Length: 356
Image 1 (cartoon, rainbow, N blue to C red):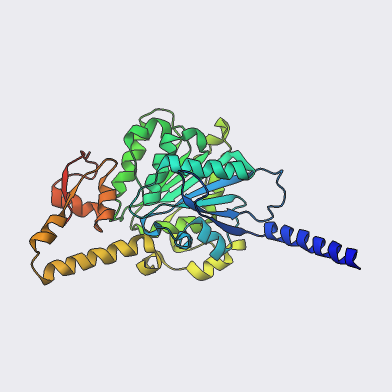
Image 2 (cartoon, rainbow, N blue to C red; image 1 turned 90 degrees about the vertical axis):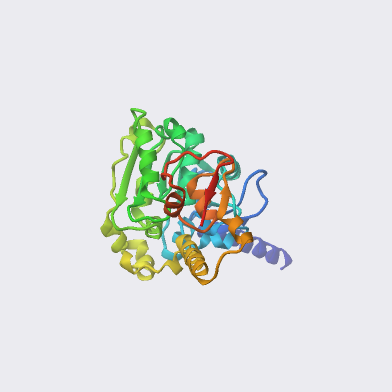
């Protein structure tokens, strides 16, 4: 009888283990990777065959999800799409969290990626990087520094360094940006597109959507077409020719996917883009609310000498207008107007920028 109990207990343990890995599960990792980030890792459905290599998607979030609470990373993006809408990307998804006040560091992202590759059976020919806003900048920066680590990438409402253009030209890259974006001007993406195309043979495409603002672009993560486009690429030169396959149109933003596994998505997010409330999209809501508070305080009372000193920001290494705008809860457009500079101006370390 005792042997039967032991056997039954062992059998239940095995079945429980199989159940855990046969369902999509998101695991948190803190202090797991030296010189890396805290991160979430979503295991694909039916991950019970360790001999089968599977794709890896790296999701880089925007400024509003920064911090030390990994639950914030679930507020929008690929992990949220999996948990809330029924999307099944059939891939590992790693979502690191950038600490508050910092920018994405390509080296630290790579350390997290390598840890996942070491501990799980990842198809190294199917590694995809996607990001929005600060994460869009992070995508440009990561692919620009480590093009050989990425199979394909998507950068939403971001920007980057034109000096990375030669490396970016080697990787299938889809740039998406709303033309009505007031927080990261569309010119930031256009600047990168133009720089990449100057390198002759390249694999970049870009779509700019009239009437769409910063927060509207978050809906791309909930569209099946995003994953379909990524999965075309397997690292071969032949697959790179598929860069222009699949389309995302204004209609896709207004009419969300309603087929198959995406039924839950249609119920929760099927709204006309004009009806989207910023409160439900933290990427831009926090910035706009903070900006409105600044405007109100300026109208209420004169500024003291102490507050006057806070109106000037001294440029540090690695700064750009977008990063400075985020730090000071304003927009790049306002910074340009206040300082009489252009959106693509090159900033110098030590340069003083008026932020109010």
